[in-house]
Amino acid sequence: MPTKKVPKKRRVLSGVQPSGEAHLGNYLGAFRQWVALQETDDCLFCIVDQHAITGDYDPRQLPQRIFDMAVSLLAVGLDPDKCSLFVQSEVPEHTELAWLFNAVTPVGELERMTQYKDKASRLESVPAGILNYPILQAADILIYRAEAVPVGEDQLQHLELTREIARRWNARFGEFFPEPQAIVSGMGRVMGLDGQAKMSKSLGNTVGILAEAPEIWARIRTAVTDPQRVTRQDPGRPEVCNVYHLHEHFPPDVGLDDIAQQCRTARRGCVECKRILADTITREFEPFRERAAYYRERKDEVLEILAAGARRASAIARRTMAEVRSRMGLDWRVALG
Ligand code: TRP
Ligand code: SF4
Image (cartoon, rainbow, N blue to C red; front, side, top):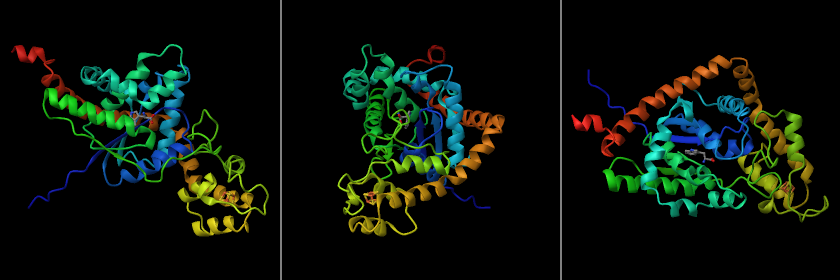
C-alpha cells in the first residue's frame, strides 16, 4: 500500500499565568484563538507557574490558581485529545534551557523590555526574575522548537527577544532553533471595562469567563462609554466607545451596523446597547460554566490531563535538551568517551 504522506503540522506554543479563573481579556486576547488553533496545528499550551513567582504572590494560593486556570482552559474548549495542556514546572527542562540562554542574552535587551521597565519602576528592590522573565519565556517556546506563538500585542516585544535569542544561540552553536512567528488576533488590544487600562483581574475592570448572567450584566452595565453621550438624546461615537469594540468581538444578532447606526442617531440608549452586549456574552459563555462544573467535580481527571500533557511535552523537551547540551559541550561524559 502506498504510504500517504501526512504534512507535518506547524508546532504552536503559548502560555498563560496561573491567575485562577480566566477573564474576558484572557478569552479574547488568547484562548479563543487557542481553541481554533488546536484544530489545525500541533499545539502545546502551558500554565506558567514559574513565571508567576517573579511577582508578588501567595504560595498557599498558587496550587488552586493553577487548578482553576486549567479548569478555565478546559471550560472554554481546549480538548486534551487535540492539544497538550500542561504546567511549566512539571517539565523542568524549561528552566534548564533558560539558564543556558543566559549565556546568549544581552542584559541591555532585557532592560529595554517595556514590561520590565513598568514593573521595575514600581519596585524598590527588583528581583532578578523580573528582568530574566523573557529568557524563561523564550525557553518555553524554543524548547519545543515552536514555529508560531499566539500572543496578545503586549507580548510582541518578548517574542522579538525570543527570536533574537534563537538567532544568537544558532550563530554561536549552530543552526537549530527556528525563529518563531507571532500570531496576533488582529482585533487589537482589549481595553478594560473602565476604558482605561488593559483588562486585568487585579484592576477589577473585566468579568470572569464563568460569571453568571446577573454578574455579567452588572459588569457590562457599569462599563465606560462615549463620554459625549451625557444624556439619552446625545448622539454617540461608536468608534471611541469600548462597549462598541466589545460588540465587534461578540457580533450581535442585530448586526454591528445597527449598533453603530442606533448609537450615532441616539435612537438606542447606552443601557439597551449594553444589554444586547451582556446577552451575547452570556450566551457565548453559557457552555463554559457547564464544562467547568463537570471538571471541578472531577479533579483527578483534570490532574491526569495535565500529567498526560506534561508527559508529551517532556518527551519533546528531553530531545531538544540532549541536542542543546551536546552542542554546548555539556554532554562531557559522552564527549570524553
Ligand atoms: N508572558 C506571558 C504573559 O504574561 C505568558 C507566557 C509565558 C507566554 N511563557 C510564554 C506566552 C510563552 C507565550 C509563549 O501573557
Ligand atoms: Fe457605546 Fe452603545 Fe452607548 Fe454607543 S450606544 S456610546 S456604542 S454603549
